[in-house]
Length: 223
Image (tube, rainbow, N blue to C red; front, side, top):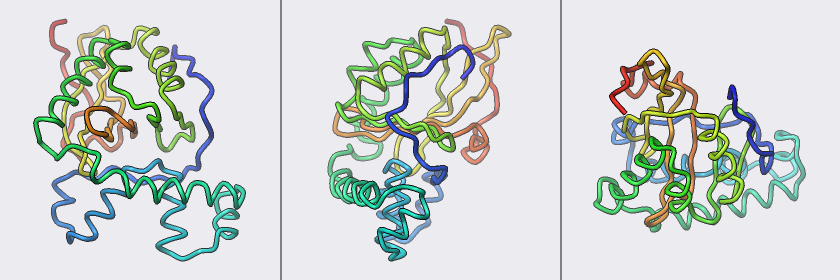
C-alpha cells in the first residue's frame, strides 16, 4: 500500500485462495455443501488449501508439502488448525442478520470509518487473523494486526464502507476517500465473527466488487 509501511507478517502464505461468494449465490447451493463451503471460506487461505488437499482430495501429507513447497510438519499443523476451526466457528458466530451480528458490524463500521484504532482493537479476538489474497502476507494475533491497522490509519488513509454479504458473513466494499470528493474502491472486506468480536478480516482485491453489485467509486459524503 502506498505510504503505508506494514509490520513483518506472521508468515508468508501461498497464492492459493478462495474467492468471496455473494450470499445470494450461496442460497442456491444444497444445504450440506453450503455448510461446508461457508465454513471453508472462513478459514485462513493456507488452512483451507491444506484441508481440501488432505481431507477432500485425499493427498498424503508429503504430497501436499511438495505442492505447497513447505514441510510435512507445517502441513499437519495447518490441517489440525483447520479442523479445529471448522468445529469452532458454526456455534461461535452470531446468526446472520441477528441483533448480535448487527451490533458488532455497526461497531466495526464506526471504528474503521473514523480511524478509531482503540475502538477497532476492542473488537478483535486475541487470535485474530488478517489476510489479503492474492498477496501472501498473513497476520495472526491482536498485536500484529493492531500494528498493521495503526500503519494504515497513521498514514492518513480514510475509508467509506458499503455493506454487503459474502460467504455467509458480513462484508463491505471498501472505498478510499480521495481529495477530489470521490471514494475509490480498493477491495472487499469480509469479517469472521466470534460472538461479539471479530476473529478474522480478509481483504479481497477490488476486481470482485462488480460481482457484489458494488461500484468502482462513489461520491464521498460530508465528514
